[in-house]
Length: 228
Image 1 (cartoon, helix red, strand yellow):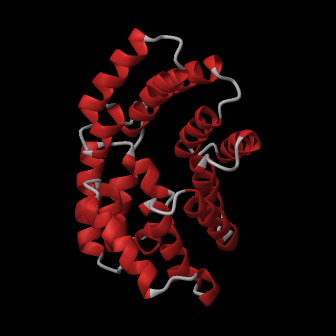
Image 2 (cartoon, helix red, strand yellow):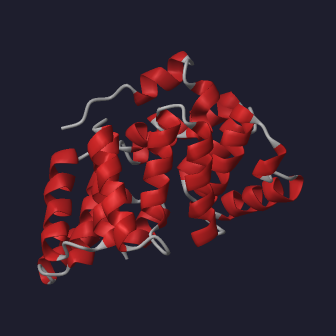
Image 3 (cartoon, helix red, strand yellow):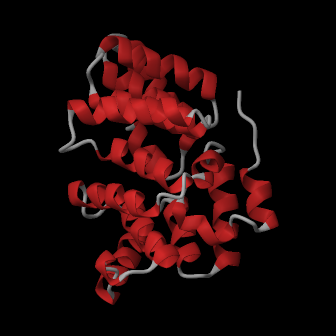
């Protein structure tokens, strides 16, 4: 239920449901992971760390819990630790855990290793072909470095547009406008996404989808936020 509310941009309701689930089943690692994930999107970094640490204690070798913690570390700019956590997650499960690939791709993008980032984003899409942020990331990397080998055809773009159109999530809609070069609309929707989930500002900082907005004063203002 919490995931559904997050998908609908109702993060307050998502938090409430995740808290209830974790209280009812205190030894369920998935519930503590979902709670930590929701807290992270709300910018409650200390609470998120506690919840994600609880999830890891309950399931030390769970790939999802490790990947969620890697994202927390990434958002706190603890890049070396985040990459190590991604490696641990992928050593457990490299066939299904696309979040670890996604976080590692963002780390590689941030270090300007664009081709390595593209490899990891490609892995995300292999695991989940309809993951719109993965598709948008590949499109964005193509915009940055070009290259026909990326396979960014008009069919690829149309599929991505259709997936984003069907989703109520604000961040993919903002990212789509960004990769299409519609920067004013991208920033307007990004502001809405951050209002609904303040942690989005930390995510946007490390996404290639916003590559050509990095120096825009409003983008800097929206993403220059401190969290607890």
